[in-house]
Image 1 (cartoon, rainbow, N blue to C red):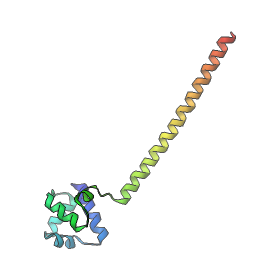
Image 2 (image 1 turned 180 degrees about the vertical axis):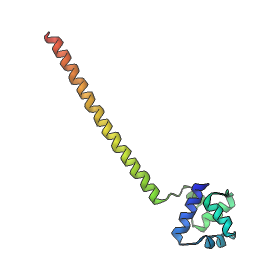
Image 3 (image 1 turned 30 degrees about the horizontal axis):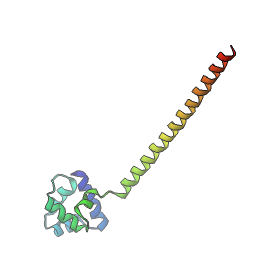
Length: 113
């Protein structure tokens, strides 16, 4: 639930709303909303629907919403891993070439011996 709370907090900040603003709109106390954001309290489906409506999205969108910074971080990490993989692939190909060359040298030296 902490991840969902972080998403809700991010959405609240994007709207420029305080915890008090959101708590009033949800008709709950500020401490109750704070517990939702911090993941201390579980959110039932009706509250989840209420929060999604407040942020003008579906429950599915709310649950799958990601922070753009976090998405960019994952993209950067993926690019780094992909580059490392390509570098390793190049190393493997180079090693395969050396093995083939050595095999050819060995075969040639046996043929001439």
